Length: 352
Ligand code: HEM
Image (cartoon, rainbow, N blue to C red):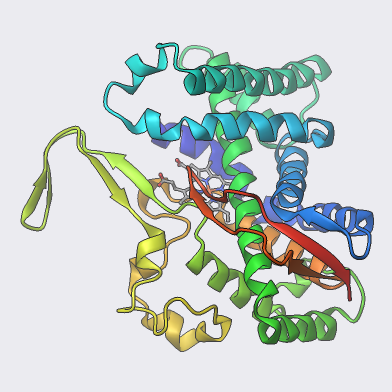
């Protein structure tokens, strides 16, 4: 089932299609940077989520979700807060109990459902092929009635992308701004590259290859704070791992967060050091010493999309702004499905 759905989605993420999204991404980032006022304090977590939500909504579903961003954010938080309970055995049973957190999560899911079903209904009503992912999902359903996707499956796929496609990217950006704020030397190099490559104009797809330091900064930020900090699987049957056999139904957990801070692979692992990412270092690194996008058959389908988005947004915003952590703001990682910041990320924006 997974493979079939994956094949169906794949064309939507093809490099040629994604490359058309570059200007759109930059456009949204430009709009956001123009809405900021010098010296103002913002929750950068919220700002980045707003930005990436608008982008995924527009590029993949061709809708403007600006107005719904707050509702989606709240609903998502409620779903995520019930994450630990859902990992427990008998979670399906638990979910039906009147536990307040779970009840909130159920209601939140219903709100998210309403938003996604709304998008599907709008699209059906317009009857136009937008050439985006949602159109593809709906066409696949229409052409293949017997074994095609049900309404609920379209909803599930759309929901997966909608959620997987914005929270992770926003999260990566938030931690990157935080790291930059306490590393003025790195920030200075970043600004120098952005200014030299762009010469004051907005970035485009053609600049990606030249923005190498930006890419290193993003890479290093996701090493220290991988948005998907754990990846879990349940063993369907007994599963042998070297000498150890994980019994059927065990939950196996792999952690990019742990691996990417392992001194066997990274010298001075706690240090934010984008310069470590030389081509030689990269080539010598064992395969799963760096895996913020997972691996295997379920590896992130949006990885190219994400890299392009991360680099373009970072370049656009840092071209005009410097973000500074508000002194005394408690930065506490909160490991939910993604690695969030418990108290958000309060930062002051300073015009460069
Ligand atoms: C920094 C940004 C991102 C990170 C760190 C990230 C990370 C991941 C990881 C680790 C997985 C695998 C989960 C597993 O193995 O259980 C995954 C899957 C997935 N990601 Fe991403 N992702 C990012 C951005 C995106 C974007 C932008 C999209 C879509 C526009 C996206 C769509 C998906 C989808 C649909 C899957 C499920 C693939 C499948 O099951 O076949 N992701 N992501």
